[in-house]
Image 1 (cartoon, rainbow, N blue to C red):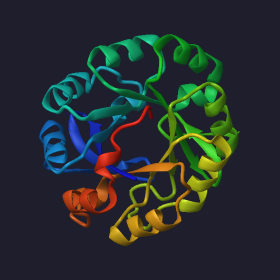
Image 2: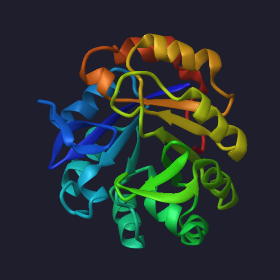
Image 3: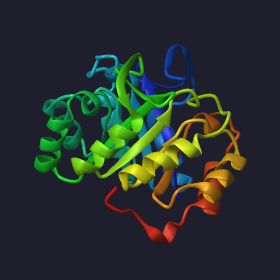
Length: 249
């Protein structure tokens, strides 16, 4: 599986939230650009970026910072947060972003995403963010009536490259991943799935490696790295098959 370090950006700074709650934001004394360089130097071949300002509607706050990250590293970059229009898509693709994560817009307007996929090609990942099995949107602030597994099936139908599944209750807690829920998403969709949320130590990675569905291809981890509970370089060397390289997801 691929170990994917995360950079969550709020007002140009590296932060981590607990269960998506902005009032819990912990600011780290690390510049996002320098952090991206550090991750790549540690062996990361893919970095997950979340634009928290864009998720709340301010799509201009962090674009310059994301551009600087793109110039600073050569690895695959996936960006999520507030991507809800063709203008957003084209701006980020023009910056050189490799994968775009669609959450709210896919949950609310899946037919539009199907058209985007046909037009822009193999660049979209679907972000499924759920609590108690139900999808949440708009920066995780609004519950929908859509079950996570139903959205996973739709992701396969529209031709998404893969899915990032986050159990909101686990995110930022360091208390362990939702392997069972992630496996269900992988099973019903048949797509490559990236697990996100709850990674706190190496034991959690061992659990994933030993129990995850074959379609679970990656793990996103952020807070555990910042809090020095995981050594990224060591975890990549131990758990990531470097020889397998990148696939279309």
